[in-house]
Image: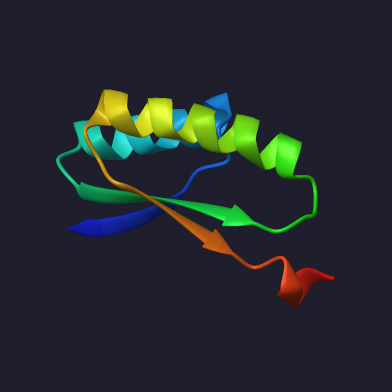
Length: 69
Protein backbone atom coordinates (compact mmCIF):
# COMPACT_ATOMS: atom_id res chain seq x y z
CA UNK A 1 0.00 0.00 0.00
CA UNK A 2 1.29 3.51 -0.80
CA UNK A 3 1.19 5.80 2.25
CA UNK A 4 2.02 9.49 2.74
CA UNK A 5 3.70 9.99 6.12
CA UNK A 6 3.86 13.40 7.77
CA UNK A 7 7.41 13.91 9.03
CA UNK A 8 8.28 16.58 11.56
CA UNK A 9 11.96 15.68 11.67
CA UNK A 10 11.52 14.19 15.14
CA UNK A 11 11.85 10.69 16.52
CA UNK A 12 8.13 9.78 16.66
CA UNK A 13 7.28 10.49 13.03
CA UNK A 14 10.58 9.01 11.83
CA UNK A 15 9.94 5.79 13.75
CA UNK A 16 6.38 5.61 12.42
CA UNK A 17 7.76 5.81 8.89
CA UNK A 18 10.38 3.18 9.69
CA UNK A 19 7.73 0.83 11.11
CA UNK A 20 5.50 1.23 8.05
CA UNK A 21 8.47 0.63 5.73
CA UNK A 22 9.37 -2.53 7.66
CA UNK A 23 5.80 -3.75 7.10
CA UNK A 24 6.40 -3.48 3.35
CA UNK A 25 4.49 -0.30 2.55
CA UNK A 26 5.58 2.13 -0.15
CA UNK A 27 6.05 5.54 1.49
CA UNK A 28 6.41 9.19 0.62
CA UNK A 29 7.48 11.62 3.35
CA UNK A 30 5.66 14.93 3.68
CA UNK A 31 6.89 17.96 5.63
CA UNK A 32 4.39 20.80 6.12
CA UNK A 33 5.67 24.35 6.54
CA UNK A 34 3.04 25.82 8.87
CA UNK A 35 4.77 28.64 10.79
CA UNK A 36 6.99 31.60 9.88
CA UNK A 37 10.29 30.49 11.46
CA UNK A 38 12.50 29.63 8.49
CA UNK A 39 15.38 28.77 10.84
CA UNK A 40 13.26 26.05 12.47
CA UNK A 41 12.00 24.81 9.10
CA UNK A 42 15.57 24.47 7.86
CA UNK A 43 16.50 22.28 10.84
CA UNK A 44 13.34 20.16 10.74
CA UNK A 45 13.52 19.67 6.97
CA UNK A 46 17.17 18.63 7.26
CA UNK A 47 16.21 16.05 9.92
CA UNK A 48 13.27 14.79 7.83
CA UNK A 49 15.58 14.49 4.79
CA UNK A 50 18.02 12.38 6.82
CA UNK A 51 15.19 10.05 7.88
CA UNK A 52 13.96 9.77 4.29
CA UNK A 53 17.45 9.05 2.97
CA UNK A 54 17.87 6.31 5.58
CA UNK A 55 14.52 4.80 4.59
CA UNK A 56 15.07 5.27 0.86
CA UNK A 57 11.88 7.28 0.37
CA UNK A 58 11.20 10.67 -1.26
CA UNK A 59 10.40 13.79 0.77
CA UNK A 60 7.99 16.49 -0.37
CA UNK A 61 7.95 19.87 1.38
CA UNK A 62 4.59 21.64 1.20
CA UNK A 63 4.25 25.32 2.16
CA UNK A 64 1.01 26.11 4.02
CA UNK A 65 2.27 29.21 5.87
CA UNK A 66 -0.23 31.54 4.19
CA UNK A 67 -3.09 29.27 5.24
CA UNK A 68 -2.04 29.39 8.92
CA UNK A 69 -1.43 33.12 9.41
